[in-house]
Amino acid sequence: MANDQEKVLAARASMQFVEDGQVVGLGSGSTAAYAVQLLGERVRAGLKIHGIPTSVQTQQLAEELRIPLLALNDVQEIDVTIDGADEIDPELRLIKGGGGALLREKVVASASRKMVVIADSSKQVPQLGKFPLPVEVIAFAETVIRKKIAALGASVKLRQYAYGNPFTTDEGHHILDCSFGEIADPPALARELKTMPGVVEHGLFIDLATVALIGKGDQVVELRRDSKAQNHEGH
Image (cartoon, rainbow, N blue to C red):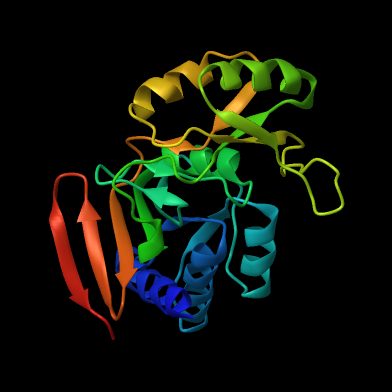
């Protein structure tokens, strides 16, 4: 439950980045869901925003909460995106995709003026790689890519549903979960993966996060790429 409390604190702290009239990217996953719920409360209280959801699941939640939505193709730019992460390193590089929405999450983050990452303290790591790196692939190329990634030193598993069928993303692709251990050079690995034909996207988010809000006990630690951590008292 402590993790849930930290997620809620981080989500609440992210509300300071949302203003009237903005287009807001709505992230996916358990922590982002808290932020979407808080935005729903603010919309009911009169906040005027439009949301761009990063997954079918988030879209359904936002619709239930009556948050007005737009398609990404309808906008020139997103003002701010609030999303979670599976790992965050000191340079605000992320591993994302544990929930399978990494492709849309990365597209939305890259179209945003600001990306605010919210997480509980368990997601903060000195070096990325303990969490398996999700790599989204077209099913046709799965075996070929699996071999290539294994040759880079990872143990590679096809993500499956509990009943054994391959997990399928919102865009109809498969996911390879690649355990590298500590990733010494995330940008180099990101470049390497992008050169493999059949790789649609990978879960390394580099130079995308503007600020990370991390719940720690009853406080929120704010990390920026250009400055030291700041503490906020919990409310």
